[in-house]
Length: 166
Image (cartoon, rainbow, N blue to C red; front, side, top):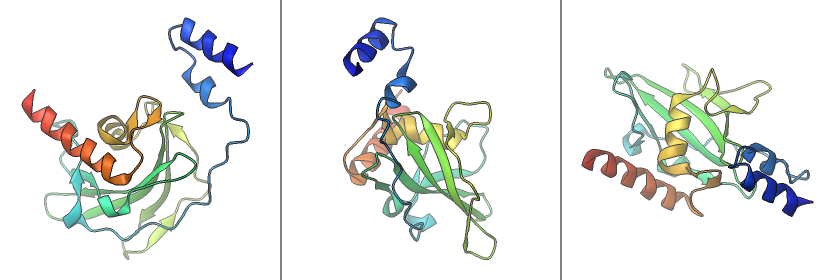
């Protein structure tokens, strides 16, 4: 059954990638660990469109790849005057989705998102930073791009270098 479904998807030009991800009916997201401590000084930038006026990046020490295939990280957005916003998120490359688990409150504590849900990376209300991170380092198509967080960071840095060269 799985082989025929995969073959059908391949023959139809890959139009049913999301259905491939649904082939594992037993998949469950692991219990989400608490957000890691982060530092804007360690931030590895994510290349964003020119009209985005804040610096956006991830703290490499906050990056993890769960046994469930979810890439979790703390996203940092820093304004030109130094104000910082941060979110604890996960990207599920296999389905092309993102989930925000918590946001940093003004008191410096994490505020968990009630009933956090997966949403498409490229949906109408997409998170541009998550899509950019997925494309530049976290994902390779519908697969996690690497086996270790260090490899994802190398891909992210290489993506920036390649962007400068083009």
